[in-house]
Amino acid sequence: MNVDLNSDLGESFGRWTLGDDDAMLGLVTSANVACGFHAGDPSTLRRTCARAADGGVVVGAQVGYRDLAGFGRRFVDMDPGELADDVLYQLGALEAMCRVAGTAVRYVKPHGALYNAAVHHTAQARAVVDAVRDYDPSLPVLGLPGSELLAAAEAAGLRAVPEFFVDRGYTPDGALVPRSEPGALLHDPDEVAARVLRLLADGAVEAVDGTVVAVRAESACVHGDSPGAVEMARAVRAALAGAGVEVRAFVAGGGGA
Image (cartoon, rainbow, N blue to C red):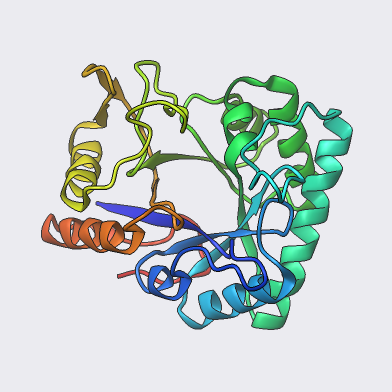
């Protein structure tokens, strides 16, 4: 049994630091690196890609709305064609940083409000997929199980990779609890580690109302900007090791442990 562990990284900007990217890069197998639209300045992105390459961590492009002030967590009602162009622009920017670091963009994952919109918003989901298909149809798309994004990816012939959030609450229908509502964020390392083990053993997660939701996932995400993110990632790695589960990237180009 094996599973990928991913995290959102490269989200610092100028003198403002968010999360501990160095520590997280020592724990995850895939790095969802910001592309400058929702977070991350050029120097931060180049440094993050270089450190990921040095550590054998796969780099994915975390594309988002052009919303630095809102950290990409505000929905933007965009023309699908313009959204596809924005995604292409971000892919090209991060690919440049990867190239000089000796690596490459290996997959794509939407960020924040775009990620949540692509669960149900068919036009925006297709816009993201169209951009990925036009750029490089070999790139997998990482998203929420059952989402319009993954359905569109499969329809376009792309590899659709379902993921699980170890530190986010789930609704009874398998969506993420909005950050503005109670139960949206989890902080207990032991609790999140137990959730991952249950996911792998039973294919299920307990929703905020106590119901059990079926979840299929190839990758587990620990948000790099969450309080205690490093401790949660360490707890997950320890729990997986104790259960005999190999932690390795879902796509070639990085290391495993």
